[in-house]
Image (cartoon, rainbow, N blue to C red; front, side, top):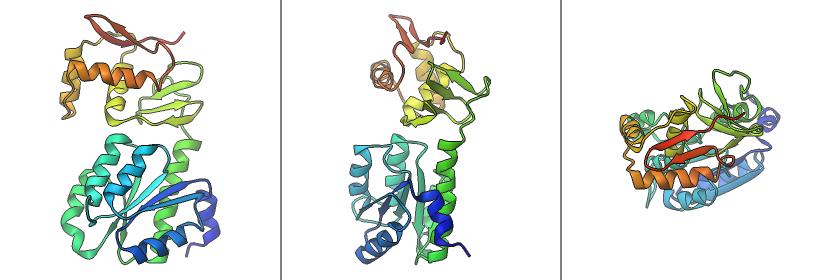
Length: 244
């Protein structure tokens, strides 16, 4: 049986967003969560949760969401969050009559599920597993392998294995489209990729990206990267400049 102290050792510096439309369950569970997490925010539905999430996509280390909610359900919330931050850890609350949704959630690569009604020990188990995953990302990134890491500056590294951008060993949140772009260009540093090359790559990921949206994507991505990391060659394409 898990004890509270063991959980706190992993969660005391983390933040969590709890999304549940049932008010009593939302309030009572939030009260429990506040014993473990540095920050606990709540939302009554997926739409409200998404609005909160968009304010800062790196604010919450863990999101717990019910499946069936008004305005926006847990599946749509999950899809929207993953589009903003593919690395977000999400725990899904699932009642016995939610089985028809589970296949879709598995396809979304949800790894953490919690049955309703919530059992306290099962909640602790899920929180421990999820918090360990969060802490592993921040505390133990393997940034030593030249085969897995692309150095963009003295502080910035893009890890090819997990498609994560680090600044001084801290994760920089990338959207799904930004992550695909970085992975594509970083696989061959210095090579110039045309708009057609980039569009075809996104198509292979079942996504659409035309030339105008490529420019917008690069403009936003540059704000997260060291100066001059991405070079634009007019009428030719884009490339990552090797760091010397």
